[in-house]
Length: 72
Image (cartoon, rainbow, N blue to C red):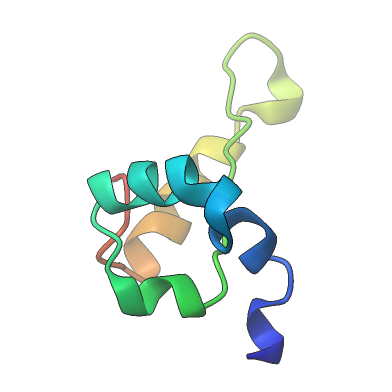
């Protein structure tokens, strides 16, 4: 699957068994390893004003498109 080009370096092969074990523990199934994996990072901080609005953006990203593997 061409869309899975980067994700398969983390999920495919004997050496990646520990990675798949961790992903299975958070709810991934066999068919999920053939799909691209997309991560969303949140740099929200209230220490400096430059990042203070990121929390609201991250909340929107989490609620606008819920997914079964969401950490929210």
